[in-house]
Image (cartoon, rainbow, N blue to C red; front, side):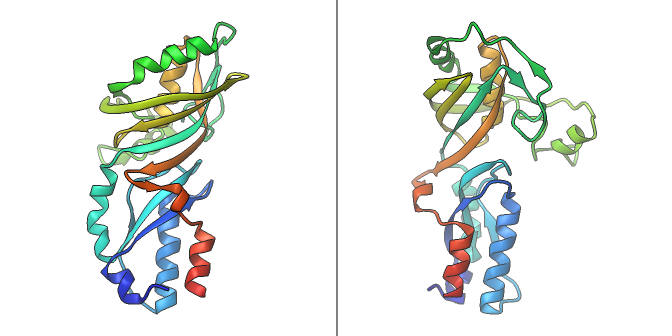
Length: 230
């Protein structure tokens, strides 16, 4: 078992974030547990790259002096798997909000789906979702969105190395994506629907890798708690 000094000098913890938790909640829970276990008043704990509440998968948590390396981890390439549902859009580009428009899908074939991935490979311009934590004029974009306020969002250059379709059935597209920092998979789902002359939104998202770190080596929050209790 790790010691108090281990956590203070710096640890990299691989956590498999559960559904409906924010990344901030995971950090808070782990910080609380470490402080409680070792009776520490203060310890730095942070995460290296936000996952949306409706996403699961790899969250890198840094403690103590390793929090200085957070930017390095955030800059590494990431791998995701998930599902895009075609035929409808939502304001949040995922299931956080209700479907606000529906589109035809009868024309969409597996070949068309495979072909559409090609326009997203390489460096592309992407608009972040309005339901995101990015700031504009001191406010989070989702604060504008939830208040029903229109806000102009600038596009950003991102790089997608791999966009692989692993299943296409009943208007559901399972995929694997390898991409650069700053990529919004929700925006990719939305734009992919448009590229198919339809609509699309994300229904499932899981982060599987950050650089050389793999979710297969991550532990659940419960397992981490039990480890500290043992």
